[in-house]
Image (cartoon, rainbow, N blue to C red; front, side, top):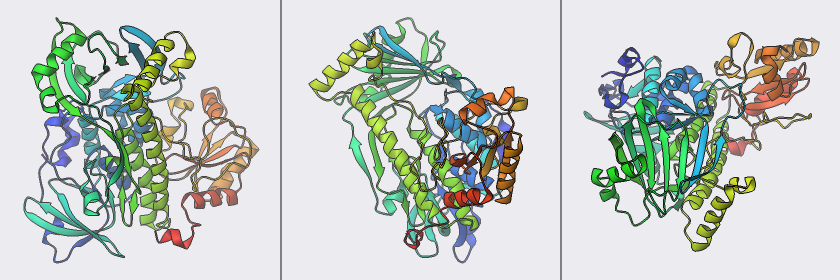
Amino acid sequence: MHLKDLPALGPDVDFQSLEFDYARPADFDLPAPAHHPVVVVGAGPVGLALAIDLAQRGQAVVLLDNDSRLSTGSRAICFAKRTLEVFDRLGCGQPMVDKGVSWQTGRVFCGEQQVYSFDLLAEGGHERPAFINLQQYYVEGQLAARAAQLPNLEVRWKSKVVGLVQDAGAATLTVETPEGRYDLRAGYVAACDGSRSALRQLLGLESRGQTFRDRFLIADVRMKASFPAERWFWFDPPFHPGQSVLLHKQADNVWRIDFQLGWDADPDAEKRPERILPRVRALLGRGADFELVWASVYTFACQRMDRFRHGRVLFAGDAAHGVSPFGARGANSGVQDADNLGGKLAAVLRGDAPAALLDTYATEREEAADENIRHSTRATDFITPKSPVSRLFRDAVLHLARDHAFARALVNSGRLSTPTVHAGSPLATPDGEHFAGRAVPGAPALDAPLAGGRWLLGTLRGGGFTALVFGGGAAADAAARAAEEAGVAVLRVPQRAETALAWQRYDAQDGTAYLLRPDQHVAARWRRPTADAITAARDRALARAVEPALEAA
């Protein structure tokens, strides 16, 4: 199948069964390597998202993948609200939400007794749910369908990168195909090729961190069950004593079950149906009618590369960092890497920003990786205590949590993914006036309903800098004129009943203005902005005033 045929397949296509055709690239027959502005390596969710973002921003993109299929098995299934907002900006969020299972409630059990429950999106006024559960191959399929709509995005299947060298002008990639090898040159290379990144190995780099001495079984089963679409997590349940179990519903009546196995478990033996089926029956009941769809046994690690930028090569997603699956931080943080990098790389390629802007991709997303690793490590230590003292603490917390709110805050079955606030980023202009609320410089913009059934983030999909101006009076008019004088697009938010929540979330007054980056993060905010202030904040967000030493990094 050719990628261009994907949009005609409809939302119910089984993306896992698709196989894409290899096509001889034009580069193969050239006397010298062709130069491409940017090459993305890896057609998983991160690589596809980044390639789409760059193509939507007008850049010509080549996307290389060493396979010809989408992912096997459900793999990443839990996609957070912020990631869905990114997919909306890329033009493919709605079919994912339509197909996925929306949820926001989690329940934690100890033994047979519920310890507590939580609501991940207790407040209303958001277009997207807290999370959807959707198999990774469906997410990749919708991203691939969107990629097929973009004429400046070329996906090359069965194209394995086997060589990489850099010089002052470009990076040269050697690509192995069914017809042989060829070279191409790239202004920049985005390494989105997963936890076993070939590009990382070709550069002699590695990830560092902690590998956890435990094993878990993933079992995807298809069944019709009365369980609600919630996240259920058991500590020491009677059907799997001494260990933990996680239950999630996915699309197509497929349920994800994670069983903790312990370090001494034999991975090959535990993947056999005769070992899996009794575990599932113990959870569901002996008379349960289900079908085993996919299974895997994994050991996980929390680790990252020391630096995400190495000259003209930028690492993103699992190629740059890895976490345990508790908290749904892997794929979500990877897509948010792509969200951060796309606008910055496009600005550099257009000549609107110095190459030093790419250093801020590295520093911001290294900060995000560290935050995710902290949360993931703490969750893993709580779920799988490795000493008698830590187990005593864990069990005491679970016992107290049944009746005491303070102990519930200590229960950690995986702090679920939230976007990192880059409050200390050099791209963020510090506040000069008092503001309340969460929309601080460096934070992602907050969604809210607008008039006419529109949503705030839905109006920000153009991909450039935007001034969000509140009000309709003289102060708001002056703020809008200042933004236009600075060459920034303006979104007016008048004060009406429909926009009250937006005003509240942005602590707005007449004339309040927020400058939003291309990745929908807050760059700066003012009560009464001037054109000079907006220009300076935009230049800061593009790293235009950088030290020469940074430019050469």
